[in-house]
Image 1 (cartoon, rainbow, N blue to C red):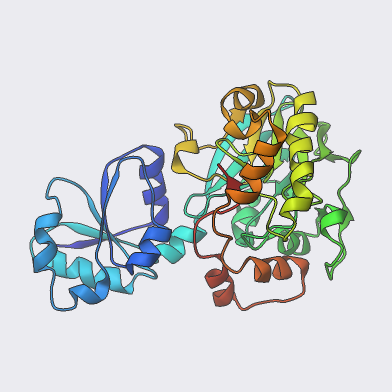
Image 2: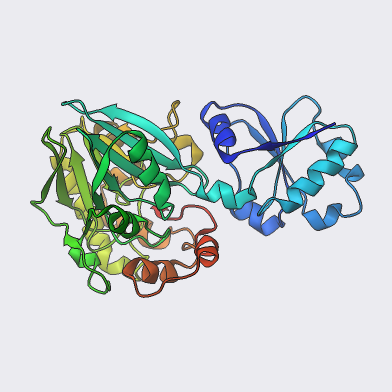
Length: 375
C-alpha cells in the first residue's frame, strides 16, 4: 500500500466541490476543536499523535474503508508517520502536505466578475484562515486590496495576467492577519493606500485613503471610490469598484457583521458601526455585489468557491442588518463576541511597522480561525 501526498490546493478544491473526505486529525484535542480543515461533506476523527505511538490498531474500526482518508497534523511530520502505519494496516491513505501550516497560508484565486470596460476582479480565498483579498485588473494594470503577508502570490498572479501592480490598498489596519500590502507596494514600486485614522501610529510613508479619493486602474477609467465606513476600526474604508462591486472590508460579511473591539474600543465604536451599516450602506445600490475581507463559516462560500452576495440580499438575510432596536444591536456587538484573534496586538503592531517578527513567528501569530465577525 502507498501513502499519497495531497496539497492544500487539492483539499481546497474538495471544499469547493463539496466532495466527501474523512480526516484523521492527529493534533491535540484543543487545537482541533479551535480550528480544523472544514468542508460541507467532511467527517472527522481526532486522535492526538502521542496516543498512536504504539500503533493504530485501536482506531482502525473507526476509519471507513469506502472513503478517501486524509491524515492532518500541524506541520506534516506526524501525519506522514501515522499515514504510513495506516498504510501498513491495509488502508489507502493520504497526508496533507505542510500540515495545518500550509492550510493556513494557502490562497485560492477565484474570478468573481468582469468589469464594464474589459477588466476583471479576482478574489483570493484564504480557505484555512477565512481571509479574502482582491485584485482588480484593467488594461495591464492591477490593484491589490487587503493582501495577506504571502506577497509573492499576488505578484506572481499579476505577472501571469501580464499586469503591473500600481496600487495597493488596505481597507483598515488589520488585527487578525499580517498585511502584505506594504511589502507588495515596496517590491513593485506601487502606491500604498491606508486610511489615515487607522495610521496614526504607523512608522512608514503611505497615501491617505479618504472619502472623495478616486483611483483609476488602467486606461479604462475603472474607479475605486473610497467610502468611509468606521466601526470595525475608526478608519475602516469600503470601496465601490466599477459601480458594481462593494468591497466591504471587515464591516459587513455574508452571514455576520464586523466586531468593534479589536482596538479595545467596542463601546466607543459601536455607534459608528451601526451608522456605517444602517445609514451609509443603505444609501448604496442594493444591486452592488458585496465582497468582504473575511468569511466566518464555510457555508458562506458559493458553489464556485467565491464569497459574494448582493447588498439587497444581505439587507434581507443578514441578521446583523436587521436589528431595529439600537440597544439590542449594541448588546450583540459588545457582549456576543468570539475569542479575540491570536496575538492580535502583536499583529497590529506589525502592521503599523513597529515590530518586524521573523517569518516563523509571523506564522505562529496567525495560526487559528478568523475571529473578526459577530453573529
